[in-house]
Image (cartoon, rainbow, N blue to C red; front, side):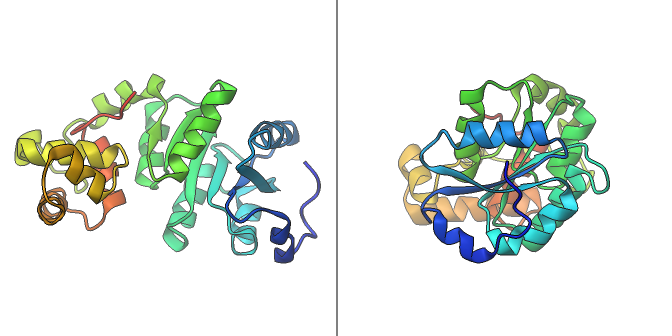
Length: 234
């Protein structure tokens, strides 16, 4: 990957603004170059920057305005999970996918708490990584299936405040709508899926948020996954 250090925001003009702009963060040059080469085989994806550390990534976000940050978990200095937390705190619209060798559920739990949008193991197949990146860019969350069951077992029934929130707190209709939400459906798509009016769906969503103790869509999705209320589609 070429040296990006002296590139200005004007260089964004080189890219089609409809492309998915990606920043790759990894302290190993071989990994950065390999990911760049892989992703840029796709006509709708552009790697706009390769950062060697989390700190470097945080410093260039405003300049390069990525849609997705593909971040290594373990790096010198600020780790990937803490960097994710910092990115989400100041720029929640940026999607963050952690790409790692670690399948320990404790790391996945911390990643979810930091509001990561994806957790992917580095042995993922090339085509699958591209699919996941597009999926996350479209508003879905993704946890590698090889760690999903372990995470759900650890977090099953534990709510945001540490209190137990059983599935029974939600009606069958609310669980159905929550499943659609986790699958990334818009309010209109949910209405069509469950054969309800848009206003009725919005009313159900308001009740779901209240019961889960959250205030927005992304928090409801993460709460649902944390608590094992619904499961990600295969």
